[in-house]
Picture 1: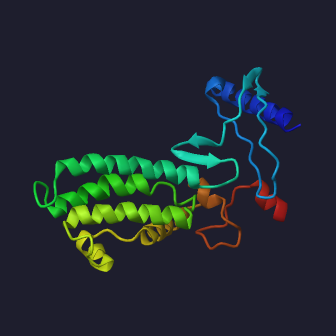
Picture 2 (picture 1 turned 180 degrees about the vertical axis):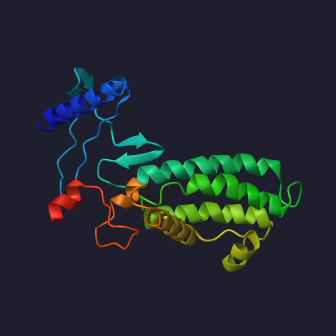
Picture 3 (picture 1 turned 135 degrees about the vertical axis):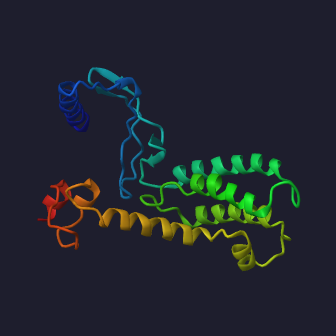
Length: 219
């Protein structure tokens, strides 16, 4: 039944796209079966026919715009991939400056803030990393702080925060979410889809809202 609804929905979208002179590449599509925490049954391995083409379900997660969405709504796969990228980048960056030579601490800090931190902290506006993953992120940033400041490994952590000008992971996550909340809540709802999906009681510039299935279910 779900596969039939999926095929019908794709057909409607395809017809709309065709009228706008767009076309979808079905062979590039990824499908995944979203499960709730209560669903303990094994994941289905059967392919699904969409638009006359047989598509195999993704094994555990699908990638979209750099995000990895797991079938159980977890965030481990996303942040495990985000953590691997800056770790590899940091191993290469360290070769540019051995401790106490070449790059100045200021230049090293700029490189870390331009390359490592944005790569590591991609997606916390929507996906919340687990406590274990936050600890792993903090371990990487601690290595970065030592490299920037050339301090001893026994140096107090609070001193490293100030000397390297790199905050703890939790503060970065809070900052990113606060900025995202401001960016979503301050524009005119007429000009921003995300703003127009806010609840009707949320104080915005005007009362304009876009209809949504979730809002209709609670109205």
